[in-house]
Structures are given as C-alpha cells and as structure tokens.
Length: 174
Image 1: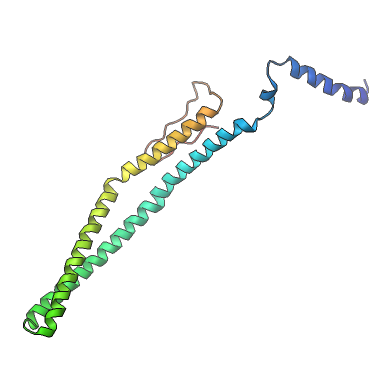
Image 2: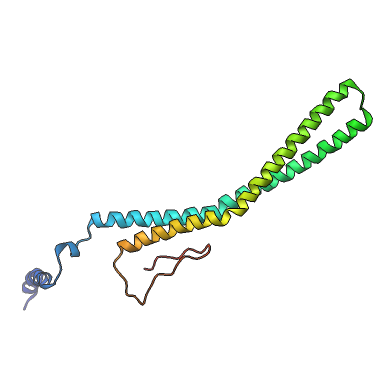
C-alpha cells in the first residue's frame, strides 16, 4: 500500500473508530459551557484561599501592630499628662493663668486614658475573635473546594481529598 492510499484511508479509519466508540460528540469536544462553572468555581476557590492567607499574613498582623503602637503612644501621652498635672498642682495651684492649662491638661489626660481603654478593648476583641475569622475564611475555602470537586469527574474512593485543618489549606488533587 503506498502513501497516497494510506493517507486517504486514515480519515475513514478514524471516523470508523469514533463511530464505534460508545461516546457522543460532546464527550470528544471540550464544551465552553461546561468549563465556565468549573473555571468560576476554581476562581472562587483561589479567592477564598487568598482571603484567608491575606488575613493571616497581612491584615491581622497590620491591625495588631497598629493597635500596639497606638497603645504605646497613648500610654506615654497619659504619663506625660499625669506628670504635667502633678507639676502644675505642686507649683502653680493658685495662679489663674496656669489654672486653665491645668484644666486643659486634666481633660487631655482623661481623653488619652479613654482612647487607651478603647484601643485595648479593640485589641482584645481582635485577639479573641481571630480564630473565628480564620475559621470563616477556612469554611469559604472548603465550600469553594467542594464546588470545584463537584464539577470535576468522580475519583476512585481510595484516593480521597484531604481536609483543610488549622491554617493549612488543603490543595485540590490533580
């Protein structure tokens, strides 16, 4: 058989094999309509993983540092006002000109202490509910992972997907 005969028979053989196989044309062609939900689910999974990672690595440490530095600054400010009030009361108790400065300093001291208490409470809440926030993001990752898995073909039971635990996010099996 020469090359011309073989080359002209090849499309016919391929067509016969495809017709004999128990599949449809949609099985052979990757449908964009079936790819859209899978791509969307994979994007949502990646987004959920990124949100969890950004919270744990960026947002939480940044908020914590901001609160810690502001608390330290307010503690120093409150100590300064306390020293100033003590100095004013000791030396200038009966001077009218200094009385206004003394009152202003007392108000500034009260303001600094109130802001300090607010920031300490905010830091406490941030620490207390950190695990809840992380768990919320982990649940979003798990939901997105389940959505991706639901759109993928079924896998054998001996190869099951690992669960996400702690702050480690399980990867989707290939």
